[in-house]
Length: 319
Image 1 (cartoon, rainbow, N blue to C red):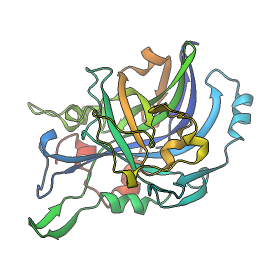
Image 2 (image 1 turned 45 degrees about the vertical axis):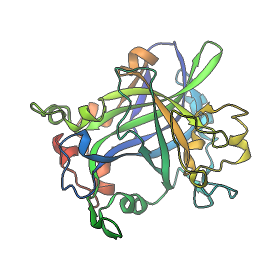
Image 3 (image 1 turned 60 degrees about the horizontal axis):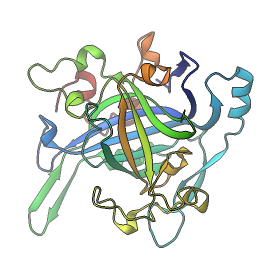
């Protein structure tokens, strides 16, 4: 499938692509439930981002030569976390994302994306796993059986593959201030399948996953208290950013995801705030997928299909 391409449809507003890649959505039914039939049956919602490139410091209106120069800046990226009082991450590793695309597993606290009808209401999430190995993601999504002292034998189902598409993280210049967006456009399930829900809400509808969407994305300062609105992660699970990233917060509680390297650290907490369900209208940018012009194959199925149930992805219905 690949990360698709983007086309600037008008000069304003000014946006710069910071990162591009593929995005996959999953959900897991609640413990001891064989299937989910609605949002109330969902234990967790996961987002997996597979990066194609980072730090492509160019405006979309730049010439090809300028874009080529910018892409030559791409180098090794760090993943994990530095050592310190917090234990977020599993150490630090340098990887070449051109040769080893990063895979990030994020968990949404409210088990859905933000409601597009409630603009300005933030939804909290965190990065649970950063790796270059698909098998690590498979292990996190598989089902398991275990025993507890108080509730006896418990069983969790494997995660369900829900949707697949392309994404961008971009810098948006608005007046004298910059902020960052996470935008995506779906390829699977195909539109016909996604609309077959009958009287019951489809999984996409119930979990607020539109065919395309734009969210403001903000990174939480791990050295500032969470406050009353979001409980956040325990102290030892919070990300330990290197000084180059931590210094960008100053005394602020939140910072734009600029650069997106913040998301390369396990325990990174973020907020998503619904901005639009029409990317072109909001940002003057059109995301194009390979499925726009021809039939395409699913990278999700190729990478994770043997570890998760794929019925929701293929049929647009609950399982």
